[in-house]
Length: 216
Ligand code: DC
Image (cartoon, rainbow, N blue to C red; front, side):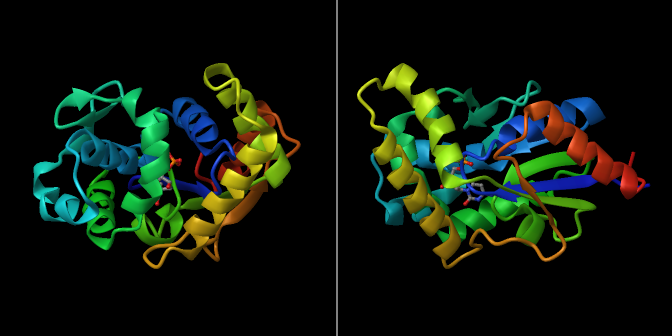
């Protein structure tokens, strides 16, 4: 059997990476966080004070990869914590809209030849349209906003729940309405609404789907 690809797409703050990481660990597969790759490109733009046009012109100078611990690197430097900063959150969707950026990162994602769990927005539709299992994750906006709010409060105590909810709805709109590779459920994906599911229940749910398909 060739490599097994599991694509996990869906809305922001649905816990895609939590599930993808746990699943990769359980199966002994590689985990690839494609959102981190877009975030690293956005960080490069910020650190070098570039406009979006300048970013496009200099794309060849940007090297994004993962070290042996799956930590994201930008031109050889581990930037796992920097890519989670607020400044990156604010600009990353602009960067992820750029066709040239997407082409570069998608081509790189397609070069992973081993069995992989990959999470993002376009994995089942664009990166690996022939993935053996495609999961589309969703949850009620209020539940997702509550999760995000709980995370944010540690570093930004002044943040209001309504603000988090509005921001989340705006990101959903941007992800779904982007001209290039928008967030869209692949027709052959299975929907996982995890509003009321624990991480263990989600993992069991995926394992059942893998067993049904005789992939494990
Ligand atoms: O999942 P995340 O929040 O780390 O993603 C960061 C940004 O990158 C977000 O704006 C969505 C975008 N993204 C994308 O367009 N395609 C992907 N495959 C992964 C993320």
